[in-house]
Image: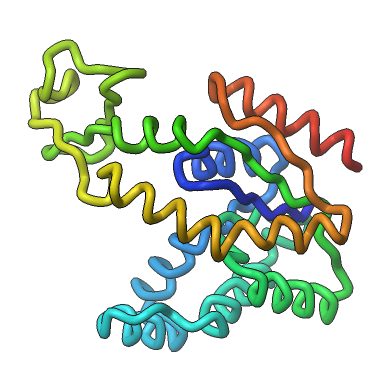
Length: 217
């Protein structure tokens, strides 16, 4: 299957992308991973992307698209892939369509994870990360530490990342609504959108997504 995963920040896209890709035996292609891989390998695209990032500028669509194209052409993506974080806007979606058309392939579904905005803000703004080990993550409401401000695992100090503040989250949501959300209507016109609720236990959301994708085939 060839799937695009969309949804607002805090909807659990990263978690669901990893799980769905594993269940469907297809690679999870995330723009963040693409950037990191190209920059660490010092590919031409990586150097180009880094030059924009170092200057504090957004990486142009054509660079992102070229990275995605290169990744989708790898042998493990022949039977399908799950795109996470790309396309991010309508022009990228149009470029992806053109790219797939030249390869003679099409998308099977665009999976839209829905979550109420108030819940998204609560999820992200309540997150606390350990200073000693960033893989130790807690939540003030959903998974609080035994002792406030202290990591249960290693005793490190828990803190709120700058990009997890409520103000920053609301800004990220505004960017999502203005730039990324329009691709949902773009793909709806092609009959590709499958919408599922992103609320509830992780396993339940994964099950919902798999069932929805199955019915869409």
